[in-house]
Image (tube, rainbow, N blue to C red; front, side, top):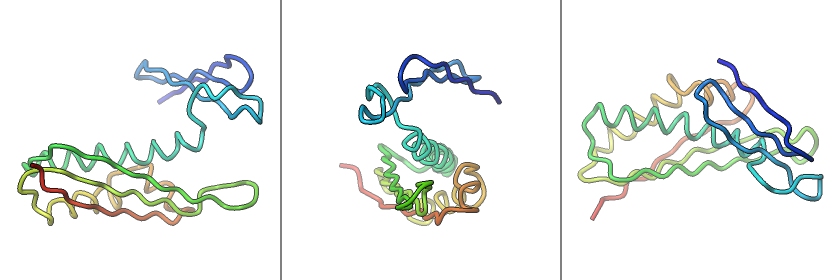
Length: 139
């Protein structure tokens, strides 16, 4: 796997990877950026959340759960001093569907957190990682 960052100007970079997609990463104006894209630490939270989300959705599909929506809220707390690393990250799934089995949802979140999500598992060596879920019955 390989990723490439190309400097655009100021603190703005265009990132691409083997998949061929691109993303813009930039800093805030007070540091010399133009706010044209995601911050690097935001990307890290999105990476953790999306890694786990793909696992959970795949597992729920295999268990034939009728999911109609899924929102993942990722909350990261950072250290007060430099380097301002993440100290705590919580990944909360809000799964909406029809007649969802709570045991299946709980198991999908647990499997992602403990076995499949390489991003969460890698960070868990130095960050307090937690995962939770809420089930919402679809109309």
